[in-house]
Length: 513
Image (cartoon, rainbow, N blue to C red; front, side, top):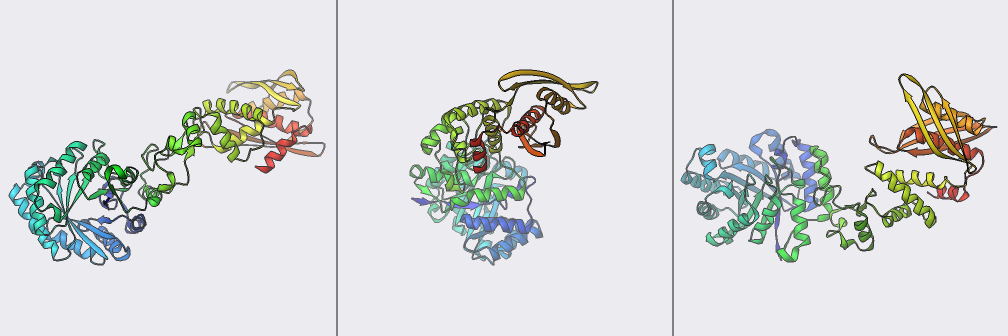
């Protein structure tokens, strides 16, 4: 099996992503993590561009060991000298020289002809050789260059001493089969190609960066240039995590692998996201929040029975402890029961589970996200429904800026339906006045609290009340997406406690949780 080198350019090309600028300490922190990830080469920056970039490359070269540290240079002496100075403290330093080879760039950017660019490329490589034997040459915009001219450039820079030749798809123009054909063409037409490693550097403008990179690996490329989370210019670069995990998962197909410590992938992704402020989309392959999350009942049932039914990757391989079964309206009873067990509700009867699941399905139609706190609140509400003196049958409230709030409430009192209206200073006050009239309670409301259990405007609201009667103080709680309903349920829950009718098994369950 071939070992493909991973050249990480998060700190150079990745930083060119708008808004991703990093200071020296941030770059150093990421570089240390990239070393733990075990990438082969870190492209730490473009030293000639600023003193800050020079310092970052120099500190990484001086302080991060066991890894090749590279700096980028244009094909001019001052750039090359600056990189050499920056990486001289590295255990292994590389100078990366870039110049465009496409006619578009030659005409509109460089204002040079092909022969002049060829001569400049050879001279630059020879100049760099005085500092190190590890020279990489990049033919910028290679995929839009004339193939035979690209072969000439590749042959001559290898003769001059380049040990790696990069064939970048600088603007993400090419397609996977085209890119593979180009790499194959170079492998067959350049006579000294065996003296250098062919590298690839793909941008994602058309969404093909990873596919292009893998196509090139199949045709003989030995190094992939990529970034964490795929950040980079415009639409970004090939994502390191996608390239690496594809080679790991389909190693027999590619007959190739990497030296990457994949269990550091997730940690590295989170660090880069946190430092740059560029968040990862939830459905991002490998490291997105939904990459190992399942909501569909059919999928959840399959995962619980055998992980490989719906997962081709093991989350532990990238540093995630386990997959997530997301409970929502598509979830099935199997996953719901599994989550109840995880939360400590093992003693529920099948009937209680069934009733709770029905309530859960109703709640999941009202909320986009169901959290563990939602389920715990749901279970406590469901269990206290039975064998209580009072239970809420219906509630209707009218309120507004131009009328006194009016509440119409219907309670089941020891199995008999009773109905009452009440008014108050606000909708909750109106509800509580109606309940007091209906139940004849002499209790005093000592405390009323309201809070959101989970975030968002669709959050489940939790209400806590404290009632006192005959020197007895009880606490009632309830939750509901409608805070007025939650207020009524919390008050009724406290009244039931005052009545001394509460299921003992629920008390034990609550204490256990």
